[in-house]
Length: 274
Ligand SMILES: [Zn+2]
Image (cartoon, rainbow, N blue to C red; front, side, top):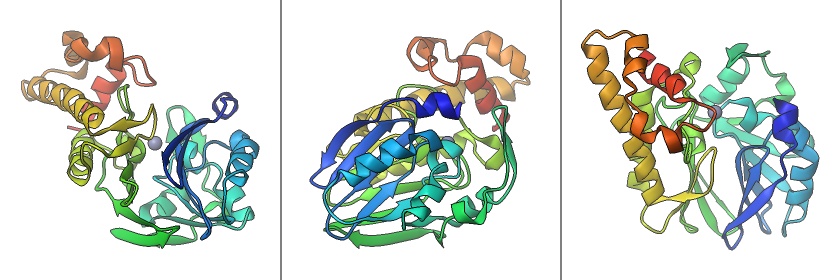
């Protein structure tokens, strides 16, 4: 899976004067660059490191100063050690550090605890703000949604919000039940992001193309509609298999069901976390 993801080319999208979105080999990365050094959010998978490093080195300004992990999953944190070797510190929610020190089994993959050199060097609990390159960057912890480690990164002046995997743009989202994820948290997370943004905000999802307020609202409506239907069926004592047979997501499946989570997979995540 690493090799397959890592082979994807990096594509870049300008988000602001000193702000760039990088996509391809893993979750979406955002780089803020300038004289104060580089602040990078998420890190792709390990095989992508040489091309990520050369893309970052090609941007103006100082060295890579800080990496932020949006949450603990490997397709976002896999290059933590490479960033530390390159001289950067790693800033993350305290739960991200905790989860990275534990073994996990997820989607058929086994993860050993991360070695000390891959762990965040600085953690926060609720909120953290920093000024860099003329930008005010605020990290906000989101109550359990995709995991219990989720962080939004808000670039206040550029009017950009990185939501990590609380937002999958255009596909049903994966929810990591094993580390606290749940459907109501995903919807609450989307609501929180909607309240933090406006019609002009550029919204970066964990996976999928760059979006905006309208795109996030559509995603919110899709997952909340499915949640409501599954909840009604579950309350009427239907089993998971019976709920899947009813196809409560049918109207959305042609577009939203083509990602990593097939309709029945997503229905199971919703059902099991209600
Ligand atoms: Zn994730």
